[in-house]
Image 1 (tube, rainbow, N blue to C red):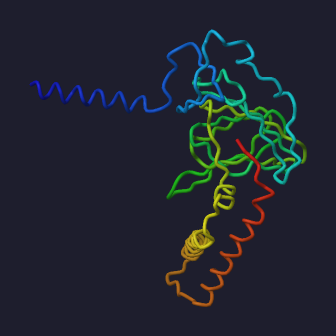
Image 2 (image 1 turned 90 degrees about the vertical axis):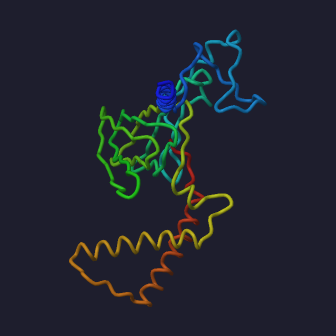
Image 3 (image 1 turned 135 degrees about the vertical axis):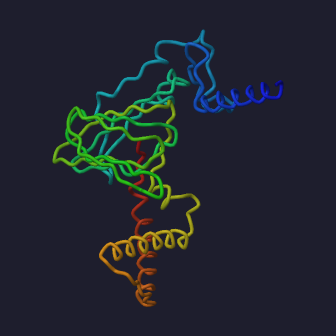
Length: 255
């Protein structure tokens, strides 16, 4: 009987631990973040609450358009714990995204947050891709007042599909959502990822897509052609090289 009770207690504790395996709830009214603290913690160190002031909970400037004069034609103005110290530990942040005509917020992920986006002006083609092996694309054209959600950690994007400027507001479920822009991470890594790695990854994807398209067209046999294979190898290396050349001027922070 005692053993059964002990096992039940362990299972209860384990279940409870799993249920709270995310950012913990605040244990005080607020925790104004200290950016330059020598102490390293998961997040920002709290300032003494007695020293808090209204400015710690205030941010001005979302009424001003971001500068979209860059290769992508978009600009993100974030309001996270780094810009608004009072957001620290509160599990929420905000961003304004400006687009020039056909501007792009390139494919990226937020490892620590779900994003919900609403269009204020213009129209946007937005979407996200599910994880392996499905890699399904969920995409839609949004117009003024429309809302779309991007699940945490999934690759997503926004493209201005109109001929005029577009503006959107995004809310995220973390005070520090993080951002990984796919092209920057793959082709702009420091130190760089070996070209052989990138070429083989690209070639593997190309072959799978080519084989899949042939099978869907009714092919029952796929013959290996050495020369064609070498051509695909060459094209994959060229693809990697060109992407690396284009990444440098196009590395723009996205959120």
